[in-house]
Image (cartoon, rainbow, N blue to C red; front, side):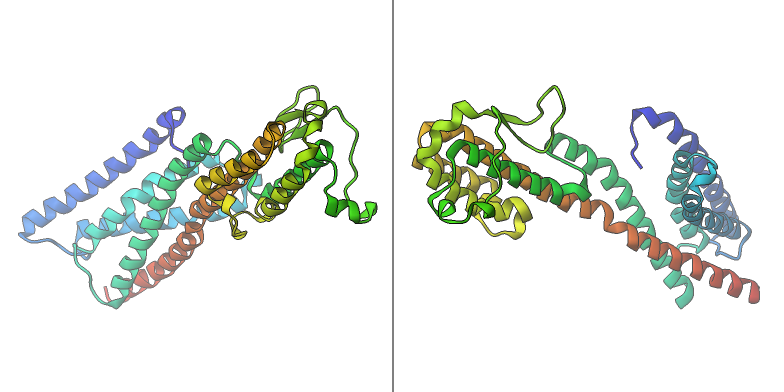
Length: 321
């Protein structure tokens, strides 16, 4: 859940009551401990109160799951559920620690507390990365696209590159020896749009005028050879072990390509270099996407385990009361 200035009042509305609840329970526990001359345990009035509140919060946290399943019923807006889930979850661990009297008991409460701490840490991790990484991506990955469409956009980029080379350089000697049916058709156009974004009336992406690059035919062999080398990277990203996968090596690689070609090919080489940079950004986006989402299955699994063990803990506590 993103926390920004526009949601300050929303979070304050839940953070303040959660803080007051924590302070009141811990103050009651401290008062009773001072009167007893020692840190009282979970069986004391204050310890039991902290345990009940912490357990109720855990059960409430798990209600987020059916809330998402019943989103079509338009119950309380999800942003309120998430804010309550966040701030009540934050104070639940201190309450549980106070409930256990700052020490672990047998195997059941110990296991419950360890899993609870791990679930709490995973939740805090999710909160932190969801508030840092999306903003970082917005600032550092201008070529970011829809995650599920990365392969499609990469395929379109390769088509753009091939179309650009066909229009500017014609076919290479190797391609001329092949059947015409095996080669992509060249659509007659005065301009070639290079890039994933297009819109009617205005051009989004890099535009190359066919007339201005038609003299690059003398560099056809070098450009087509370069394209053959970078095509696997444009399609599959870092899985293709090629120099252009690394930003610094890519700069050197394209500098050598420019030296091997005439100045007329600079616009084409710039476009190819931009495509490689876009693909590297896609790779970074995929990595960030994994960091953003891999924690969630662990958090859900740990939360379910904590809820089950909480039920067992309550049952055993009542049994031996």
